[in-house]
Image 1 (spheres, rainbow, N blue to C red):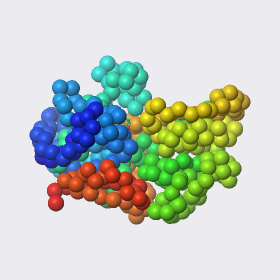
Image 2 (tube, rainbow, N blue to C red):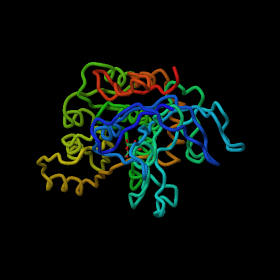
Image 3 (cartoon, helix red, strand yellow):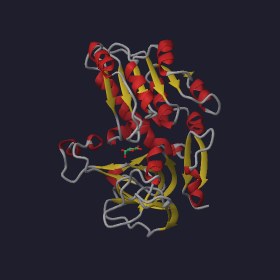
Length: 351
Ligand code: BGC
């Protein structure tokens, strides 16, 4: 089969190449890949800043934002050929730690978890892939065009769940959310904020392209100034930071409401230094009972929440998040950003 592969740690090693067909074991599905979403983590792996091949192998099949169609399923598994599925990204650590032992592998305590297409297990960027029945999630058959947005949606389903759980530490009736960054994570976060009945504000640099309209059509307000100006204009109870840009992260932390919650979702690269007034930031966080927390990955509960959120969402709006599709043989093009990109997807289906 053809697959999108990379040698982690090696520059310019991204390649569409032949890899052995997967052989499903007992309790596993064989899946025909339909689409693969590309995100910042994939770009980091390609830039050899992250990523680990499976033990004993040199190359890693890339891809964790999956969508596929079941070709073979074990009898009685609850899946049948033709089902639309996504594969869960993370697997619990083998120890397992107390969190992984309880199915909360997204909160793994010892860092020995593995992740498809990222850390020690092959990803879903291939014509065929296999996945354990227990880590496959069935999607509404009507979601074929947008189901590839599931994985980023799970990340936001978790972030929102944790925001609400943290808020529940005291009286909490949030009315407004500000999201920094109108990429797929920011926009899916906005969609879920709207579904919760909140007033949604999204801040991004882009003044052209699809982002302003996507926010507008969601019923949200689009901002292009600084975080301080956006906060001044909307006084959010919650900020979701979805860029990972150091300045914005600290701007978000400095601009919270009293008892405000800031959820950081953007993974940044190390080594960017800047000056901050640590005294003032700490003082505000303490005196206002603020919470700043990070959120990554998602467990099976969040996959179920995300599947329901996508099924309920406006499908044509979701389709507009996918701004570019490239066939597998030209997958390298997906790694060269173009103006107007929101989500770029590699089509895996045979032409
Ligand atoms: C993925 C997560 C993953 C994280 C770190 C993100 O891009 O969405 O599932 O845990 O990268 O590897």
